[in-house]
Figure 1 (cartoon, rainbow, N blue to C red):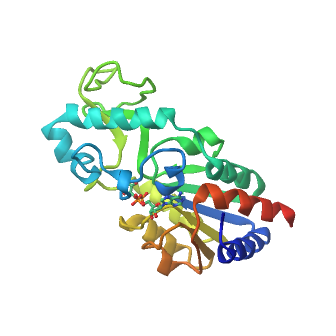
Figure 2: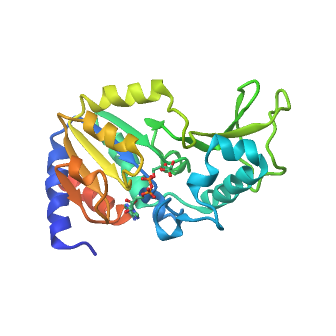
Length: 249
Ligand code: APR
């Protein structure tokens, strides 16, 4: 149950959105937490004795591609069992209602697509895709668990890697440029479930300098100082209420 302050903030945010024509959304691991996918920096974020920072790196992959593929296969199995939650679904409904909409996600779990969102920029890649380290072919890997590890390229047989942006790697500049262009003209920006511990969501939030910037996170984050409204609530609780308020007019 949300407290009265969060309820009031949702009312204000919904009224701002009602008069907006362009909505940008940035999501992080927190939006998938209520689907059972552990966040990176929460108590469930550790895997065995490893941390994401120790495994999701080019060095870790060079050192032990099998271990990195094992970690991703473990995460894929959790993602495969997970279902989109009410927050993912509310975003898909919002997209259908807004004249102009863009969802920028750091998540690689594919839950936004499964909830029906269409206009998505996956700036950290997608756990259901792999790419060849030699010929760069990109291909879907939907089977879980993976039949054999490490994954090999279906075209040239070389070692393939997860199609994920690892620590120390650069983003796809074309995706970031598309996100920045949209953010600079949007009326409202909604940032859901990111700690802002990596710099990109903070940088993107700052690009929406003319927008009403709203955060949805049960905890304060690195994004909180960058927004006008920070709602202390869980995504799957607050987003359906946000949608209801918006439709209540
Ligand atoms: N609803 C909304 N937010 C939530 C919820 C929830 N139910 N539960 C947790 N959160 C918030 C936490 O308070 C935290 O601020 O989600 C945030 C999760 O933060 P991180 O685990 O740091 O995830 P994220 O910000 O997405 O990490 C960014 O860092 O590790 C890399 O590539 C990885 O994409 C990831 C990136």
